[in-house]
Length: 376
Ligand SMILES: Cc1ncc(COP(=O)(O)O)c(C=O)c1O
Image (cartoon, rainbow, N blue to C red):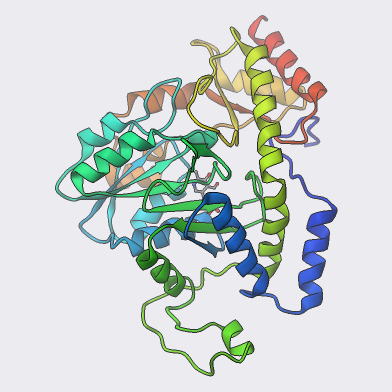
């Protein structure tokens, strides 16, 4: 399908081409100086003591759970209104997920009160997801976690470069897990990053990322080591230099692109007021404006709405089909009917196109198509 307004579009150009060429010409393809530079720059962006890259956020979430000692017999509270990886990462460890509802139709992030209701003696941690790039209620979540001795993992896939009270999202909890998948605000194709202030966790991430080995091929190439020990059961979750170079080029554009997303979001909200409901019209902190979710008025059929926009060559999506409703999760846990807001929002949500290169005309055509459908 040739979209006149796609859902998302990469901001890729000469900087990314030069970055990749630089790596190819260096003839060093994985876990070298460029990866180190990317990690350093990302840590600086977040004000984090440690940033450790991996090849996607699913792996970051898995390692976050492992390093926090989550395993069989434990429960981790997660949002159902998220990408399935948020929950899958917990299951990889042998622990169970418990789904919590969202706050409201305005704030689609995980509900502090519902987490509190779902804490049991088995609860070990919570994973909170900054939906669409808007901050979860972090001070309240941290207070609750402290009261019950729970670890806090932030799924920051939507929110690189977002802040709350001047503190980067991803650095509020024990660990933050970022995604650099192709449609993200900072895109490297596949890619991910763990950030933490805790040295003990950082050391575990380094081991788990690369087979539990005490030295890397790069160390040996540099003449710093001849051999290695294996001190943990690790994985190959490494990123490569090509993606790290793309990450550096994209990092340089992130603040400007997030600002452009913010401006487009304000324009959308002004133009769509009264036509559809607008989650996060009010929110705390500096968001990353990753996606543009709207809720259709009661009674409007979503498929007909999306079909109309598709006929106008405008791509839409939905975020998300709730995780607890997927067949796999149904088989495993059965219907969890205590998520009424998640269900209500998931039935009415449509995600509209949003990307830094979107023009005023493109935005106007999306708004025009919506107005036409709602008033027809
Ligand atoms: C909220 C959320 N969590 C986790 C992930 C997983 O990220 P990745 O594709 O880098 O594994 C995504 C990616 O789409 C996401 O949107």
